[in-house]
Picture (cartoon, rainbow, N blue to C red):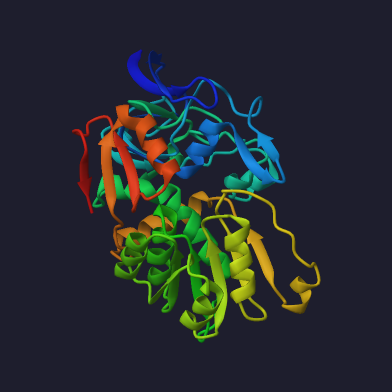
Length: 361
């Protein structure tokens, strides 16, 4: 067996701790991946807290739902070091991105190719051990995506932030030629939304945030306009920035305030896709939805086929890289706390091989 160090969440509201353990050899079509990079996603902060905010003092508790102890981390890339007897032996030595949104393989969603909608999900880093480790055991070689030619740290972000926004934008298409797309929140997820939207031919993207540095980065990545939503006239500013033609919104924040701003700003016949998970509760007049012909869509990550399409776009050079902050895997706890506090521009990537406090863009 292979000896590994994993950073495991042993109880909620606590920092992951280092645990040494044996990694069993892969069986069947499994693949053992030595991790190069693991992205730090805000959803890991919610997992660490142990609940989602439902508003009005109510919470969705994870106790008894998620398996503890758990190695979090669902954005994973690395080198295949071993495969099971039924897998392709030529994969050993290959550098691959891991599709983490794994389902049961038997339900209608899985059979339709949308494992991310499986009701008995086995997602890596969420329902089974993931990437905050030296190694990860991937249950089938088909979840390995070729990323040769791409920077490993940046490519790692494609399996969650890139995939999620790509799937969201696909659900918004076709955006009318005269329409505008707004992105609520341009942290790591929102910056990726700006970049992918531009790669998919969306000409006019309006970036909305409370952080001036993130807004400036969004403009560098292709946003045509930016709006500081802290200003008292944020609604008027967003309407003006979108030329009074806001037809599409991706909300990467998921607060009542951001969703309300989106609903107030869009024109009739618009669509809003909600990605963010910050939580809360929204009260709205139901008749506003039909009167405004408004669709509000919730989306969760994306399919394996969509990830393959995102990687193809990246290999074609269509998606610019966002700022990346690479840190040692041992700094997982500090990295999650920094993400919780806000202000991170781009994405934090953890690596077992990273020297202390390096940054690349």
